[in-house]
Length: 289
Image (cartoon, rainbow, N blue to C red):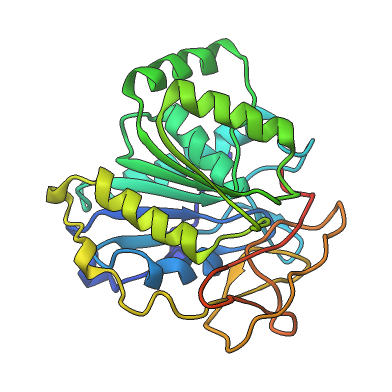
């Protein structure tokens, strides 16, 4: 059984300021850690309490939610175990937050959709960035999918049109599945590889404003005024790691080897900066599962 280490969770706010705020749970990609996606916090509504979790399995210099397998088609059992671990951590918070939402990148995106399968009424909305749905035709998952189709949660699905990491069959599977099981807002970003762009974050913020109950405390006027500034990401053979702003853009990294982890980021020595705030992260990593 896998578990979430509560002591390693990275928060966007101090503990005294979290209670009563809507909670957004961040789920990083394979080979990364809890310090990566928390870098997106300044680009999201300030009224959210944002928690970035560390995946429970070691993977290279980072961590993984479940073991790697065929790209885009992991074994569903370990994905279910990871989903149950995240749900247990969310439940441990009690009623501290009026709502809970999910945001996952790549492998974390696949876990996000698995969490919706396990608890379709638990989450206010979900965002899947460069992610996919796990194939599973078991009877138990069919029952979960039927319940999810009844609830039809709001889901934002963003991806790049030159993402060489997520296989095309997984992309098509995800498109068909989301159309049947969620109220999905799908956007494909021209020229974006396996990463997150500023345009995508702008669309995500608009999605949050649209789908969130005003009583949950979200106010679009509280978005950071400087979120169009340049943002850099770093890559260490491609683990997802968000970084601080950088002054100048460079060319995207070359495709990673089959065994490399996935990422929104690169190392400090190989920074991928945003061109006028256009691209937050980009990496071509065929090892995302």
